[in-house]
Length: 367
Image (cartoon, rainbow, N blue to C red):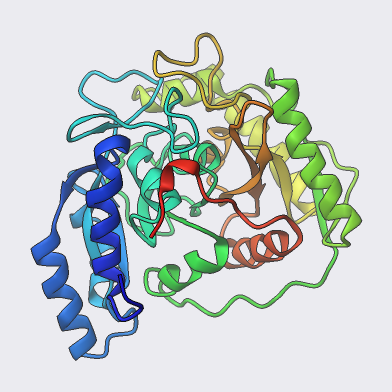
């Protein structure tokens, strides 16, 4: 393979070589992708034929995909999502089998943007679209060791009538995600590098979650590194929320007016509003557990630390924080005030600069 080979050709070659073992894609579009790349280059469109993947069978019709294509991005294929009848233990079903974690084939990549995270982690796409209704961008980003962003609820069009799901993006880094987001978000302005240190509150469990001690230790070590580097200054602020499990289930089930759910949701919103007055950032683990086996997570909700922000609407990102002793990636969650998506992106870039560079999964192969 020569340096002159196009980015789309490299992505398609990697899909052909790697996906038979990873099962990240349900469809691949080599002829259409090559034609779109030629058009993007000929018309000198801003993205210049940069390859991306779309989430699931309907991803090509999403608002984000249409905007990216108009800017010269090239969709190379549709990535795996959970199969029919899936319950909350989300996973991915590719064209030829269940999607595997590129770090450990015996573990799930998470979901529901399962294939999108695997495609980005292994270089089969430069970035991928996703949607996040309970953690569906952030969880697979964390478990595959890539960057994932859930935008503020309502910022981008979403077909989800409950209002829980927001559009998102997965990329190798926050810096890489910027190239895509500037063509998706209306009124995008280049994020201004924030003043350091970033004032931030830290919570291991949001006051209620049962977190794997090793996962908590990896995230705390990353936070301590950020403090030592002068990137973050921890603020003493109350991060305790009420467990939102019943609230999320009520909203998703079509009963958002349930009195108990309304009371918990209102209380959590008030607590988060007070928190973000004290600190512009909240740091937590993305998940309370490490990537589990393909049989499911057991009694522990992988969404325990993510779905509160689908209910509240805040933008939230996952960044690679490190690894557990058994070789599983762990994610650091960063949450910002509603509408502060670009400020969150800038903060994520500063955090990335202070943490070790993201590693490449052993199952990614070589160019």
